[in-house]
Image 1: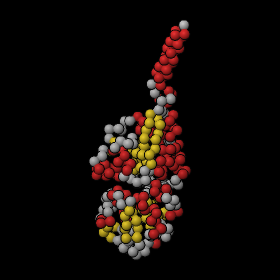
Image 2: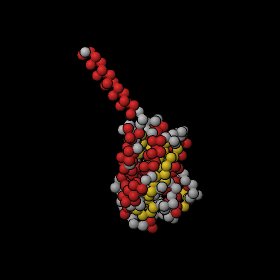
Image 3: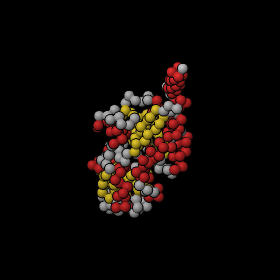
Length: 271
């Protein structure tokens, strides 16, 4: 009798276990089953925005894991080696240039925000206060470097051969009335050097992260800038449902309101 009861109990437990597994296999948030999505991002504002939508994605059955990077090279390399599923830190001109030079097929899947580049200074209040021989620092990557020179050209500080050439370099300067010295550094190294020079053109995310304030801006890009920050995946992964849910969450009214209230015009919604 004991053997029969034990057999019946074991059978019942087996059926319960199978029933539980069957329910979970239906997937989705309703069943409690989640899919992981690993996204690489620079800290501000990208990782902040991702953290903002983490709970929203969880309701959609997506467990978002955020991997932070402090430069503009590693996030694309991590995408290439598939240690992350997507990244969020760059604009299309940079993505295209990086992909071409490194033979990586990259694809933009959603516009999120614009970070107008600005010339910051702790020493002068107006662009006309630049003195003969002053030094300005700009980013050393091709797209943001060219973008910086175009900003200086439009303000009359220098004159380029062609101020529509997005990959312009200091060698393209044809007029420099005040003999301004242009120094180039990687993006993450610029803000710490700001107090040493007359001014520096800094990406908004690095400026905000370094505590450089809006009051130190003396020149800024217009809102018509084409350098919108995007969510990026490897080519072929554009229809990944997890990534589609991520883009939808980042393009929400909740995120738009957060951007407008927190970043005081140094980050602008682009959706």
